[in-house]
Amino acid sequence: NADISSSRSTRDWQAADAAHFLHPFTDFQSLARKGARIITRGENVYLWDSDGHRIFDAMSGLWCVNVGYGQQALIDAAARQMQQLPFYNAFFQTATPPAIQLAELLAEVTPPQFQHVFFSGSGSEGNDTVVRMVRRYWDLLGQPERQVIVSRKNAYHGSTMAGASLGGMAAMHAQGGLPIPGIVHIEQPHWYQVGREMTPEAFGVHAAGWLEEKLLELGPEKVAAFIGEPVQGAGGVIVPPDSYWPEIQRICDKYGVLLVSDEVICGFGRTGHWFGCERFGSRPDLMTFAKGVTSGYVPLGGVMVGERIAKVLIEQGGEFEHGYTYSGHPVACVVGVENIRLIQQLKLVERVRDETGPRLAKLYASLRDHPLVGHAETCGLMGAIQLVKDKSDGTLFPSELEVGMVCRGHCFGNGLIMRAVGDRMIVAPPLVTTAEQIDELGRLIAMCLDKTW
Ligand code: PLP
Image (cartoon, rainbow, N blue to C red; front, side, top):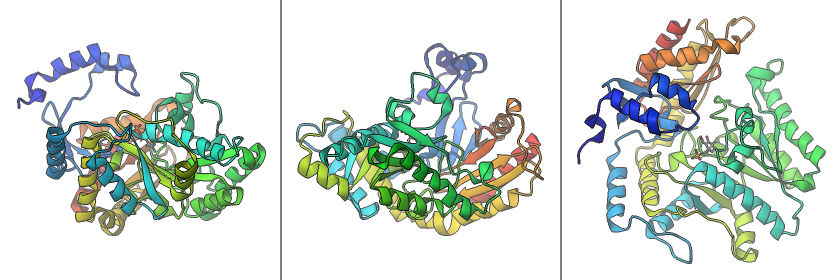
């Protein structure tokens, strides 16, 4: 097993990368100028690059490596399954034991209304499935006019045509003819940006009211579902006030609109609860997941389908004309099973809820004193720092200064991966991060803020 990463020099990798590899969400030309950072190894919460630098990965890869790097149980399970049966599909009335086992385990760890799962290969594909499934559900119930799905601005639900349309990223909508028809967006519950003249609690109810306004404008009988991330992750870790989701739930119930929780980031312990909907007190009809289900070791996603919907699809639906080659991929599914067992064995959800989450919250409370920090908030093991020019009134920096990117540069140079979303600096460290490592993270963040200031 030759180690390919050390077989060539950094420069050599970078040249080949720039010559052939079009990276996602990247200005292609920038890599030809600067060269990508080549990541070669991971252990626990740390990565190493091809020049041997150690980096604290405070983004868990892309919000996914929740059990940290190098977990032998996951590696062994994948290798065993590859040897025994690397692939078989779930089409045409066949199934593999790993897919069945994961379906069973998911029914156990998700809220009780979920007893059925539809597997996909990613979160984006899961959300595509949601679009088709909710519309099919209403068709079967004789309400085919219920087509519209309401989502939120600055939401992220993936990069496929339907996923990016559900998402509310203006930059994505500006390319490739998005959004597709039948998807509308309301404002996000961003207290710090738009709600500061109210208490967070009052603002949460007010922001949920934008859904009711939209339903009344469209005619609720035309609306199939509302979708939202419990905490908007890629949009900048925007933690809603506690009053927001119960009010959204009340409005969905009142108008018979299905509630979809996109748990691709918040699922599997990120918020200190198994699922974000449990943290915020909603009872979704459907739940999209990906990332944390396998801790990113192999790609896997899916949709948990609430009994209200599953019953109709099973008893009245006939064939559901939808599915992916990798729906229920056996290697992905054994890794999913081992990953969930590991989360249970290590009590990671409880650890985030009782120990590391509160420690991160305390750390972020102390960061609020920094001259660059207008606001700092956390939810479980997710955190956001709002950089400001003037903390007395929260004045933001002009966007062309790209202060977030400057800060990110200091992080990268000092062995920390922290992401910049505009001028919000965000983290989502692995759930295995210890209390001592939270303190280490705190020191690194403070140093990078100082260098940016
Ligand atoms: N939904 C949310 C909330 C996400 O954060 C993401 C990815 O970041 C997706 C969906 C899309 O998942 P994937 O990249 O696996 O398609």
